Structure formats: structure tokens, C-alpha cells
Image (cartoon, rainbow, N blue to C red; front, side):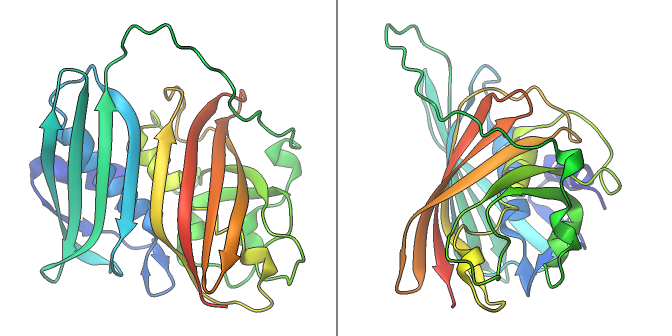
Length: 264
């Protein structure tokens, strides 16, 4: 079952079946959970002139493959900004929450362009795919991830953080227009920035995730994106990090900030 099929099921109601192939350990990969909730937001927005400004996700509990209920509530629909809350339910319990804000462009005299410049990486065709490394979760088979900077996870590196290229795996996903729900799904595929420090394979997962959108999407599902993460702080089993995502033309697309739980 393709993501597009699940997106279409959300148009018919609240119940969906989370398809096979998205496991991350014993739970469903958080990016696809966020992507499905974002698709429900998009279906709930009554004003097509409003574009996504930001989204915040809290991963409350583990999501399992199979039936799930996704509900949406418009918290406020103002002249400029609309705020929507979406919840994903399984076994009569909330497992994930997403709050998204959409807004229309407004006239303003304030213009600041200090966004982080895109790194200069080798083209992706000159880099090896991340999914070739052993012991990575099933969900990585859905994507083509190419390491360009920093150490790979679980190599006892002395330095955290990394960067590279990513896209949906062309052999598993038919090319089509790339949407906001797809961006949520793709953006989260990179592991936490502290994972290169791990001496052995151990769990680490997103607890909260905030995404700010900068430039509108103009891509297709098979197009490449650049990614780079920086860890601010890690101690006592938690880490705080931020990351940037650019398109292949070095346009800044989105900025991410995460709180990560670390079990190593």
C-alpha cells in the first residue's frame, strides 16, 4: 500500500491502516506518523490561500502497524492564521499529537535573510547509500539516504552530528508532486545527531519535534534534499538538536528542532 493510498483513505474518514514496511524497531517510524497527521491537517484547512508556517509533534506512545484513527480539530481560524490540532489514536489512547499553524502572506516592512547557507556536498551519485549499513530499521528501505559529512551511527565517534542527501526510494515510490505531508515523512528519516557517539547499537527516539517551514515546495518525490544536524546539548538520557533541510538548488526549505530520548 502506497502513502498516496493512505492519504486518499484519510479523505473518506478518520480510520486508516498503517501499511507494512515502516517499522523502526518495534514501533512505526515517527516520520510517517507525522506525515499522516499532516495530511489530515491539509484536508481540514478550509482556506487554500494559507500556507504552512510551523508544526509541532509530540510522540506520546508507540504506534503499531495496522488500524489507527486520526482526528482533527480547528482550534482557531482567524483572518491571517489558522491553527489545527490532530491526534493519532490506537487502542483508545492518543499515541501522537500534531499542532500546525497556517497563515496567509501579509504586507510587512520587515525583511531579514540570515538563513543558514547550504553545505557544499559531493553529488549524491558519488556517495554510498546509508541503507547498505547493517542493523538499520526497516523504514530506511523506503528512502535513499547518502552520508556526506560526519561519522555514521554507532561507530564510537568522538564527534556528533552529520549531513548528507536524502529522497524517497525511487524503486518503492512512484514519482509525483512532493507535498508537505511527504516532507514531514522524509525530514525525520535522519537519526539523532548523537548516534555516531554510540559504541553499540542502542535505541534513541524523538520525543518532541518542531518544524518551521521557510520556502514553498517545488519538488517531486524523487528529487534530492540536503540535510545537516547540530546537537546543542546531550546529558542524562536526553539530547537537544536542530537541523536544516535544503533542496538541490540550495533553497532553505525547513528548520527542525528536536528533543531526543537516548538509551545509551
